Amino acid sequence: MAQQSGWTINEWRAAYLHGDFSPRSALTELHAALPHQDPAFIYVLSTDELNAQLDALEALPDASTLPLYGIPYVVKDNIDVAGLPTTAACAEYAYLAKADATCVARLRAAGAVVLAKTNLDQFATGLVGTRSPYGAVPNSFDAQYISGGSSSGSSVSVARGLVPFSLGTDTAGSGRVPAAFNNLVGLKPTRGRFSTTGVVPACRSLDCVSIFALNVEDAELVAGVMEGFDATDGYSRQAPAAATLLPAKPRFGIPASLPWFGDSQYAAAWDASLAKLREMGAELVELDYSPMQQLAELLYGGPWVAERYAAVAEFMDAHGEQVNPVVRGILAQAGNFSATDTYRAEYRRADLARSIQLLVASVDALLVPTTPRMPTLKEVEQDPVVVNSQLGTWTNFVNLADCSALALPAGRREDGLPFGITLIGAAWQDRSLAEFGRRWEAFAPWSAGATGRALPAPQPDKQAPAGHVRLAVVGAHLSGMPLNVQLTERHARFVESTFTADNYRLYALPNTTPPKPGLIRASEGAAIAVELWDVPVDLFGSFVALVPAPLGIGTLTLQDGREVKGFICEGAAVEGATDITHLGGWRAYIASR
Image 1: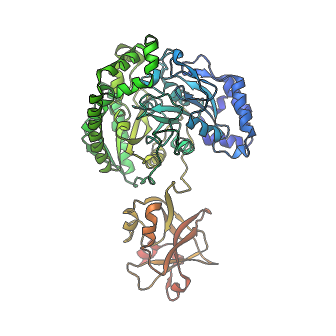
Image 2 (image 1 turned 180 degrees about the vertical axis):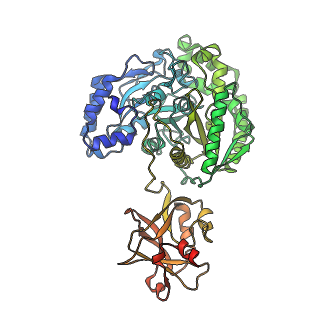
Image 3 (image 1 turned 30 degrees about the horizontal axis):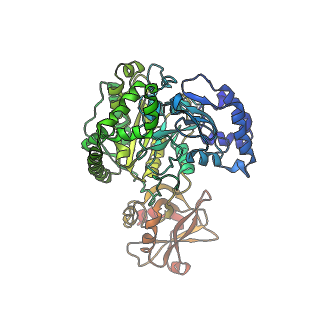
């Protein structure tokens, strides 16, 4: 299936739609080509197991209309897939999953097809991708380097173009570090956005299922399928409100000082990415990241290691000698902490998290290098604990502080190895980060993982994000006009400049302060210039309340056929008004005055 290597979800869907092949023919061929002895995989499904999924898919009503119809993916082997073994990279721990994890069940219902279970740092304890009896997973660009962990096999499978997306988990950065090392998008959701029912816990109070994808659009599509409250998961949460979209020129808080641990090429790549962000119009504000660093140290230097032990305590007590020595050494520290220590550490966590949340609120998002260095397999072997700790410099604190995060490709080092940045936002700002991620992808495009294949250019989002109303403005609310502040103070975000369909007329209304136009639909008219803004639903009502008669909010048709909410005018109000349709828009009229 070489021709499908590095395809995005939309490219797979388009091929099915055009009849190039069927899911059965495509996935049978792809499955047969999977290297079963590859260290990226712990378990590759049998032909019978694949066919059972395809039979069930074909039996679904209107299967071809499903959002992930026939899309192949792989699953980290600490996430249950019904009928398959779950090992958490420990053969002695393995059990046969009786049911799908909730996330897998939702993907299955959306038409996605599992091809394999992937390798990981044992019990998801590590950021290196080497702590597994199934073998270290090498980097997809250069086998001398690590892939990153713990979601090593999941990331490499996507980077090598075998599947368009995969599932990992993220407790301390396991869904972000491998994304940076393999030129991928790594979506680390707000805790509770995706259910963790059916996931072997690392630290259950912090764990997240994460997504690896070639581009932001695919990561968001998969996230939309997996998200939602799950009553079977005690840590599942409902999103309280729509995300606040980042402005056109966002303010990002960056660390005032950064340790690079000798990796001067990563330091140079960071400087290059900051230059590109400034070119986009972003303002970069240096912040004191010491609360983040202090909180990061608590994850492995505090009693949360006991939570890791609690997840596999019975197995450790009976079979501890069969656990990876480095993992066993980490889990053995659980006995160093008393219940009193745990409460004291939780109080410290809460205080530091509050400090971090206040810092996040002072800017539009935090921005960090996903990792401070990219080590070789040999360097990790020589000093496995210290190197692993270094990799978590900018990731370990995020779940403890209840933040959302999105890892993005950000160019290459001088030697061609990938570099990545991570956006960090408050809880439930996932879509805000993703929306900016799309803008970053359009401005600084990257190739498909390690395939070298160019990705399709990101397409403008034709619909408003969830929780927002797309509004067309035509006059005093345009950018730079007197009433634009009514949009910006409601966290509305500019989307694009465009035109109405060619059946509108524009009038300059008399006796209005500030001057305002009236837009009406007409049998004979012209295309009128408008701006589109996305306004949060919960603030849209307060905006509409400010619109004075004879103006109102109705439905406008744009030149490409889309229908959006927009300013309209009562027909009687244009009697005696100046017809300015021939000018094509309000800005041209203001300039003509």
